[in-house]
Length: 533
Ligand SMILES: [Zn+2]
Ligand SMILES: [Zn+2]
Image 1 (cartoon, rainbow, N blue to C red):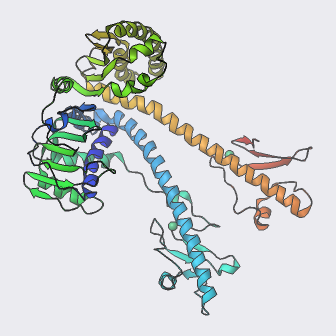
Image 2 (cartoon, helix red, strand yellow; image 1 turned 30 degrees about the vertical axis):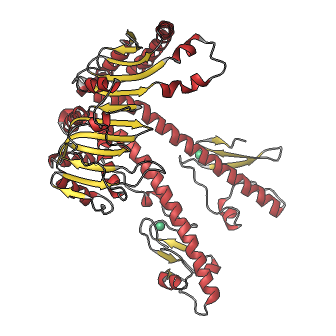
């Protein structure tokens, strides 16, 4: 549910960002945008559709369910997942901010040293730094500010071990604790309330599907069928956007239109239009195509079926071009058969689901059918076993959620229908209240151990680097003094400036060093073990 929330946010923010980018192109799109034919018409190469209204409904139901007592356990799990993801994100951001601040402090230090070379009168040796004086020089170009808004001051004269310190991040010699400088992660409750509040404003409500079409000859376009209030939505986006929106080209109660910069040389500049019936991103070269032709008419019909949630279709020649270019032609009958692929189609939903290709050559279908049956016979038991193992490790209520997915995958079989061949299954389970937490649990089951593993590995690597640093310091000490230190004395190594700071193991291990009979040091962390070579 968090993911869908994120998707929805992406849509909202994508619109905001899209508008913010606005610049070129006078809208060649004069006709009222009333239906998706502008996107689905003509010779598209690939087209995707997803049931935006259905997802929207399920998203809201899911989010509201999380707020009820029954949703408490799902919410707790989701919070854990969001917490891990956000913490990782926040950690990366914190590290980037620390690095930026450190670079700023080095620049400041350099600027102060230059100032002292040029000026008789020294800056105060301690306390706040007179940035205005440094900028006026100009010894300091740019802002010279900390990304977290910390203020800079001097701890003492620079020629006597003084340094620039930040009120948030500290200094190179005395960094402040990472906890003090960490960016607080966003919490789930705020996110849910934000989405539900937006929903309550009734500014944008998906009513049909989201269409996306690509055509190398004719550009690309996307259309979201929705009840939309262009002017109030514009006002809302203006209030939440991080930077002011550009001026729309057209702004009436029924229509707001923006020009966006061209995404690349030779590509048409897109126009973003909000109307009462939806949002249209138009980056087609030729807006004249208005009715779906050939295979796309079938796709539009499938989208209207009411049981479909996701559709994708593409021209098979894009996939087979490389195969066809091969010289000599492939001897493998399966590869040869694949060359006659004309279209690829994926249908997912509560109706029959399938991933199929259309083939021009009937003989190819027979060959591929045999090969596919063999493959499915191998893969299906593997997937089933994987899911079965997952299920065994889960609490009973989680099993109930995952079982329908296992059943769905188990029901996959080879399907043929005229020129179409592929795999299919009866529809996905109707009860999305079961599916959504199940998917969340599967994601959590996969994501949390992976995040934890990645963090563990990063910490172990950091610890190894620490031990290598200790080893280097001990060896340098031996070279300087002519005798080998018999124990690890960090204060001594710091005083001799062989270490800049005491290395800290992120898992709380402590370091020791023993000199082996062969003369080599053996550095060990109590948590991570010995230094590897
Ligand atoms: Zn700082
Ligand atoms: Zn360690």
